[in-house]
Image 1 (cartoon, rainbow, N blue to C red):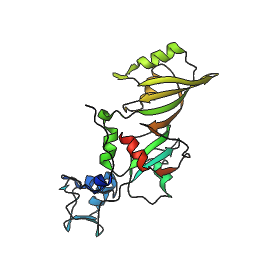
Image 2 (cartoon, rainbow, N blue to C red):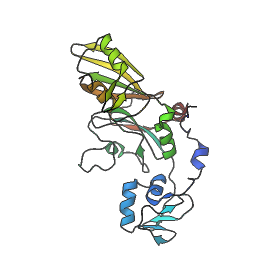
Image 3 (cartoon, helix red, strand yellow):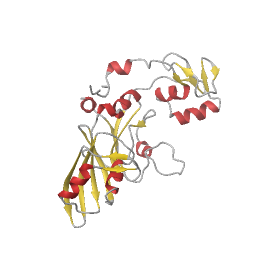
Image 4 (tube, helix red, strand yellow):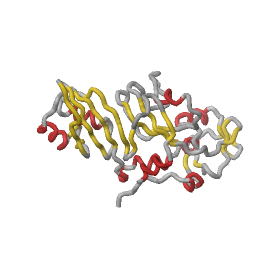
Amino acid sequence: MTRKPVRPSAELARRPIAGKVSLNRALSKLGFCSRKQAELMIGEGRVRVAGKVARDPSLRVYPDRDRITVDGAQVAAERKVYLMLNKPRGLVTTRDDPEGRGTVYDCLTDLELPFVSAVGRLDKASEGLLLMTNDTRWANGLLDPASHVAKTYHVQIASAPDEAMLERFRTGAVVDGELLTASSIELLRSGGRTAWLEIVLDEGRNRQIRRLLGAFDVEVLRLVRVAIGRLQLGELAKGKARHLTAEELAMLSA
């Protein structure tokens, strides 16, 4: 049976975070910081558990029971936040980039938010709809392959394919020993030496569309994610983010 993503609700928001997890993961689950940032703070001796300095990121704790403090202030679970962002091309989907490149977090500076993470990724050259949240269970539900949440992309390519070529795209290709396919591939429009395709995926593999089309020597000029499930990017301006509505959350959970 196909498992659907967890529906966010008032009941879910009140539910305790069950089970022991590593200390760095606990800080992430509580919406305080990323695991990497947690490891740094733990190493600096800034984190205490039950009043004792904890220097081991793998220390097992109960996020909802154990008293965890950072710099003397107790860490408590943050309110749940669900965002959609229109990611511009050229930004990486990470909080801290060692190369100093712009990140999607540069788009969130005007919003007062707890720590949030991206639900999946769009590579630097890709753009469009990106979800962000501090609800790890909800995010994992959307990312679980068993949920089969469709993702729709509009892709500009440097060729004008005929129906025979489209059929080859639909058949898929083996790349590095991995069969790459799409749920559907349709021609949106073409003109001159370029065309726009609509490609729907129900699984997420690394650079799946670029690798699939590259197997046929087709260059991708632009790749824009326009929908996740029934949630549409719509008129959200590039580089802008907003909170999802209750109706949109339900849409993703349907």
